Image 1 (cartoon, rainbow, N blue to C red):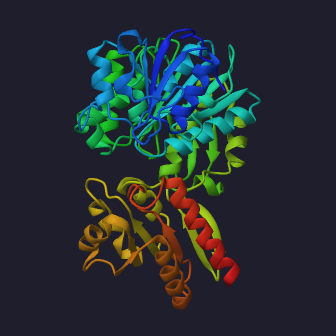
Image 2 (image 1 turned 90 degrees about the horizontal axis):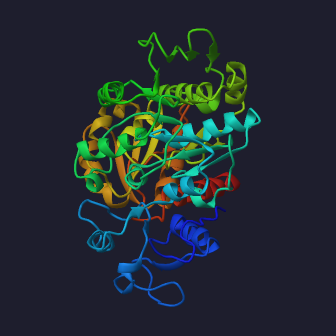
Length: 449
């Protein structure tokens, strides 16, 4: 845990008491701050907990805001308006981490998709290389729950657009921007607002710093042009396509840097073009920090992958059950549909803008779709006449129906794929909760077989 001493004997507000907020409370308490904390779900006022409307706003030195609290859209939360009214600085937990441990090396990773896999892979490479490394942020372990690090030691931090909006002074020594596709537009107003939030990761970088930028879509190529025009940091371009001849790119599952080649074809956790991009970006970040190519490649070969991201849960009666619960939008789900040809697809939840209309090219590979959650009716309309489907309602029913059908059909290379293309919050606490339930249901199937 990080001890934040900056606000010792001063009053500070913490709003939002999920895992990041609770970690902030613990870190500030250890640093002897006088804390006022609240969450919209809280009901009891005692100790440090009191409704934000009763906080001593004229005396607060900062408001630590959890990333899930609306800062600007669809409208600022009332606590944000209160802070602005009293000129109280609004910051996040990653900012506090930097202020508490300013001499460490900071590697920041963002993008619409792939950032958790890339963050985990970078951390694995650095640890394999024998470097003292802490990995967290949006990935799961809150920034302030990480161990304190000193000069030359490394934080690998996954950053969401929400978290990037709350940065003020942090300087990332290495930044990674993977891709940008429409997502979280309700929180950023429009695509321009979303892109602007992502671009915060490059702010304050200096000549000695490095920006790793994938150049596989139009949004990214524009981001590259903006950085080349306005930034001073070194730029490493990466691509999962074979069109890039400078920087680091992947061609036919081989990663090239101009001098060294890594064969990714035998690494099960880095299959598919989306993972090639993740691997190229992780390789670039590691090279920027001086890790030798052979060390990076060796680490990639032992990479265990990420839970809830194309995770093989079990193979039962020749059918593979794949947990891709982390796919909370259509673009992420496209990466899950691409590698397979015989798919019993479980999807649905709390729908996002655009639904699954961009996935029609994969519908011929769908043997049957099983729809759950709030998105059932919307997705049924999209699938109608293009792929057979069943309104299953719940994940439990969908797993049962998909397994029964796949076992009965006996098709070669069949997969039951949970890749929801939706947020989880209609029926689950998080995508992790949804994935864990899927894994439990598959384990029950396994024992019953």
